[in-house]
Image 1 (cartoon, one colour):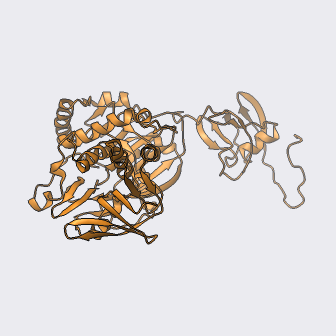
Image 2 (image 1 turned 180 degrees about the horizontal axis):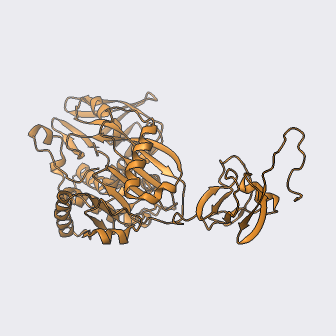
Image 3 (image 1 turned 180 degrees about the vertical axis):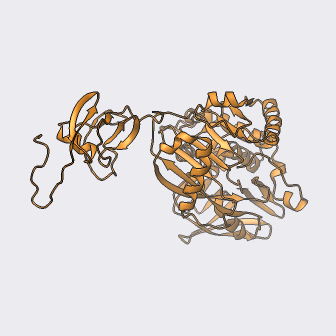
Length: 105
Length: 383
């Protein structure tokens, strides 16, 4: 287990899903089924989720509730997926998208 | 602050600001623009901002083509620091039956005779221009590569700043509360900061509020306002170049330079009035209509909705000019949803009319008197 994953929380209890394999930029990683894609990436040490459209500055996990657009990524070919809300599934293909994302997958 | 001006313009939208600039350019710099809110707060800043030359009447083609030509070099001509964002991706006008296509053929012939490079296109060509279009219900389309859209905020600001540099006084958050008339002449205007400003001429450019403003001068005009709603999506990389427009569904759909899609649709059952709330019914209605023609847009998330007011006349064409029996009162009102796209040319003509200059084109058919004479204008290509 990675050092980025909270193992023990003073208030909350986590029930972790089964271990599943997914892909980030073509690289195979492991996460827990059903957890947010961004959480799985974070646990795997991926801190840069995208680059800003205009100045191409790195953007990381930020609001975590689907509001801020910092975690928009290309998931299984779909652009602008809010990875902080998207549940992880086995075999998912996650990519950093270019610019504002492309509508045609 | 000046207590007198040669011209008082009521309304700080595209018409008011552009006319102020054009007046100043003709040497009439003693002009005050009164805007009760911020510039563009009425209809201009809420509009879909499309600019198309593809109209069915010579007068409208000329007004829109003239405006288009002005917009093409407006950044430079006004020495604007920003960018009016005039993006000429073209307009694809869709036909869903043979009678529509027949009308469009006539329109294109007229447009071509006036220099507009529009053309009729087959269903296959339409799909080349907009590859994600659902060709199934289509019969054909027309396309004009010079059409497009501009940023209504920047365009208005560009005019306002240029007008100010020429000496025009633009007063925002200043509402004209009354127009004082003596006999057959305008004396001046009262404002909500309890000022009376005497003036030689008044231009009613009040957009959705043109009716109440006309009444201040004792003038009744056959206009009403009607809500039209728009939604905007999240931005994506350039996907759709032209504006796609359907008279059949009453929608228009463009992708802005920023990447957001803007979708608008008229609701035939919309009541008259000044309501600018938004409704979920609109979102459902516009989504169904647009997605039936442009299915891939279904993957876009909606960011927000807003509404604006069309100021509508009995023939959906503007009222330009004065009023018999009342000197020095002018109107540029009732644009019925297409004021922005004809604004630059209209402003030039209004300034020419108000200063007694030769006019670039005849707009006498757009006078208020046409409604009494029964000479309504029948434009076949209105959304």
